[in-house]
Length: 238
Image 1 (cartoon, rainbow, N blue to C red):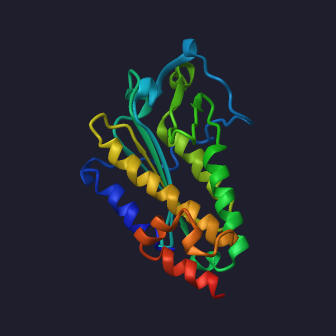
Image 2 (tube, rainbow, N blue to C red):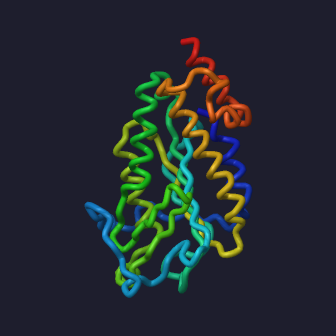
């Protein structure tokens, strides 16, 4: 699965490599507590909101077949304890999946659906995601009490990594949080939207909903993204 690779590289090129920090993967044991369902954080109880007040709040999910020896947890900008007020925010997830898992259409389709579900159904205590898929926004309210108890991106990120690894197809995961105030979030949002369009196209292809390119509203995506049209035609003739 190389279809997302160019988009992933374009996202990374928006950043200064020397300012991308690796977060420790084993410093917080036991894991931070998760909630069984999303718990409300009222304004009176929050320290600030990531993406609050109309600030950018971008989320993106991509897949790659490039090998990875281990998970990576990355941060571009200040960590949660250092943020003092509403801040722009982005969360980029890249899942490393072997090419063999994309061969069976229904298996691939179900896998995509499970990854989308996991993406939005991890509930770290004190970290309330206010997801709006229609507006392509993912603001987060951060609890004042959770910060006092030690909440940071390493603890949040570990919970997401653990959730993705509940799916055996995921060989490794890279999770990148962005909070830098001067980052070009609008450009990242454009690339995130293209990733979402690619995923929607894959949904159509693997579920064989539309096999005639002339009647498909996602045709411009296939025309633009290298490898997507070839994948579609290989499914049509299989």
